[in-house]
Length: 337
Ligand code: KG4
Ligand code: ZN
Image (cartoon, rainbow, N blue to C red):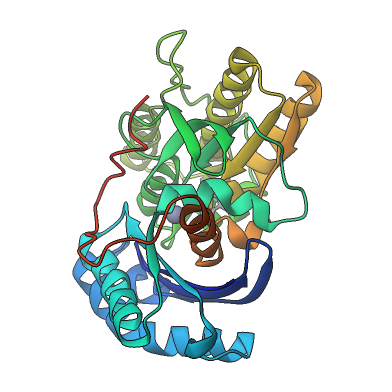
């Protein structure tokens, strides 16, 4: 089965072509980062307009790279949510039009399901069941995953998502958007022990996350130094902030796996591209005797290959989606714990 997948939930217009659930033939990602960078974050209205401009060339390039025609495609897969409504509508309506004109079935998939399954696009496919941490710009969530479509939410962020905290702290420090990769880079020159930023563990049995207190603590630290006209040790602030985020993400994920009796941990989402998170999680899993599986760094951030994979499993286990399928900003079925 040849699948054309399309992703447009935020600021990446992406298209991929995949054969069944394993052979990735094309993976095109057109990022709007440069457009949004001058505003310090994604501007939804601009994002939708950019998706409209980009979607046709991105899809054409994916078909060209895969050396296939639209007539060869057996299934269309598209992100239906969660994400920015205007951006999602561009992808979904493009796919609906293709489906109608070419008589190809389509499935609307959940973006989080894509992130959860992206690990299967790499070389170290995990075995079920596993506990998965998805940390991105919109989510910091822990799931118990027992099959390709069986996800149970264990915990989620109560305020800022991990990636959002990276982006907001970067903005405070005058670093460009998106802040995550930037802070990751600068942290290599800093001392992670320099500033003792707080870790929010919440209740003892909770798998939820909270990063707004940490963000405020960084803001207070920065303002204190500025008011005293003291120099900002940006690398130390970055490294100490990153360490606090990564510490909580790692420890909570390990505890969830142990509590649930899972021997495998999966980490995905944009923040999974963070070198320190990958390093700390690997060390902690090693000490706890747990297996760790992560997607390749290039497939941690938004892409359409993960949409193809989620679409494959949804179509083979259920059916295609109806033409009146709508987009959604939050995942209703993934939000239940
Ligand atoms: O999964 P993703 O591409 O989009 C969403 O679904 O949100 O994640 C984007 C987020 C951004 O907040 C970005 O700052 C963060 O992932 N990110 C990182 C790194 N690369 C991307 N955060 C920390 N370290 C990185 N290397
Ligand atoms: Zn994402």
